[in-house]
Length: 230
Image (cartoon, rainbow, N blue to C red; front, top):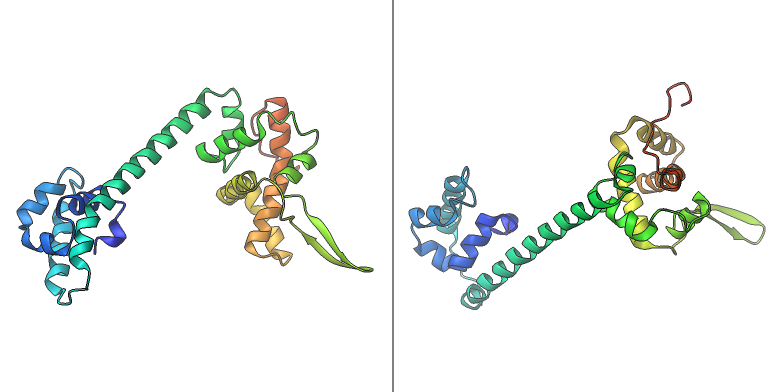
């Protein structure tokens, strides 16, 4: 029952304190509520009731349960520490991005948030190392290549080489930008051409590289295209 909620602080607290089904079943609802009240102030009563109901229905004891209950508190404590470290890392990334002179330039583009913006800055910098958008797209593994077999052409496919971290950042940013009317229209057009979801997103990411390259090189924020121009 606690498995799907393992990332919730209340579930972690219960596992750290009680370890597993045996100790949880012995604890009273009042004790369990006190243990997690500060971690789930609005839902601790519901969680405890659901937990007690699940324990009451459990009739099968799995071999190794006793050993697992000794290990679970340590694992839960490690998970809590890991999640805290990840939250701190995200905060540090946000502060680093805020301090960078190109932060406002990057985050002005639809779909680029703190994490993707920080990754792009780490991999690309101000873009001066890439003479053209094509160079940047090639570095990110977004420039399509044409596969040939003898005299026949099999179509264009994204290369498998390139900076995988940067490619993922561009891909995720393109996905997040689907709420933007301009990006959505381009994506829908590619889907209408017969491309699958991922392929259409790759096309969108490649198109956005052209805009992003100009933004970085000139230090200008994103400007949505005029409706007449579109």
